[in-house]
Length: 466
Image (cartoon, rainbow, N blue to C red; front, side, top):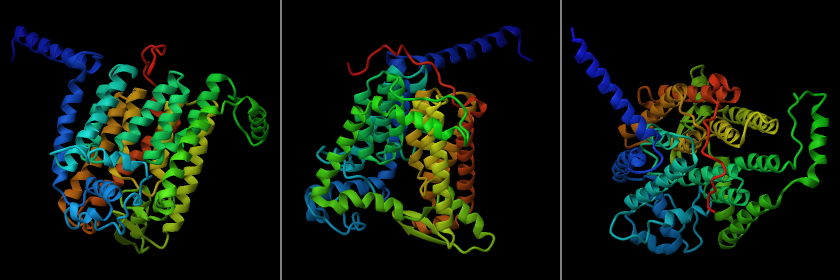
């Protein structure tokens, strides 16, 4: 049995340790504030370096796209044989990514001219710089502890993808948009969101919420807080339309103009490859094995409905006679979920940040694809909203760890993606992860466990970018 003095000394040591950790988490300036970033960047760089030795990674595809655009047919002699075998054309200034908007080439091209290091290492260092920018934004403009939360969430949820994919860039632009909007820098907010859409299409779903937030700020829009019923909805919508002459649309037109001019420019080079390819790729691809729809098809197959696993679109996908039915059901749920978020935002039940998080969750749950890097879309926004309660760490932490178990976990057990569905526990882990994510989405929409509660921000009067 320990003596009382020794026990007191031990307890005091634990308190001192806890205070030191707390100082690091809540520090806003100085070296201590950046300790979480330094530690996480080290581990994520190591993970990216390890992945760089794996053939056919996403980073290798990025290098192919960028080299093919700038060097054309020389790509085949400049890069290792087989690296770009997924591509069927190498026309200088006319070859664009099949699955991404053409503006993403700017990101893929950044590491090319940097000397000495290999492309994957240079790409990972670029993403490390983007992570540092997000960390700084949260440190300066987010709630206390939000930067450390971002670092922690990134480590447990995206250790294999954060620096090996480019999703941190649209995520950073989305966060920048919200930070600017909450400080009434509306034009810059729209520009940031437009750039995010040009890099990766998904941020476009936030445009209506940004527009409503601007109208609410300028009191240019009719907003209702009354419960909507079948009898009242037509009257309420009419009142919205009557306020149309007062709507502020200049910034919306700026964003639409930037996106349109950029797409027209690239469309002049190759309309089909630059404009049509990415939407067609998203629309036509089957359910990816990690999506909620794929899990439903897998479960239904146990009742005798046949399924076929197929490697295409750089992923393992599932085909079934009822794929179209599940797909149509997903679209209906997406529509209902998105409309409900729009209504809650219109009635003031969700602010811009909350609506953005909810919309992204609904899109991920109902989408044909649930790639591991999709968690990156949410992580900066969750940190900015102050989603760091015990309940958040429990549910989001479990979702993140299961995602890591899927990738890089299961993916590292075989060199042939077609074998993944046959691995023991693979689909069960995906099913568990998706169930948790669905639970989190529903809980957030209904504000269960008070999940939508936001932490206070620094003084909003502090400017950003002037």
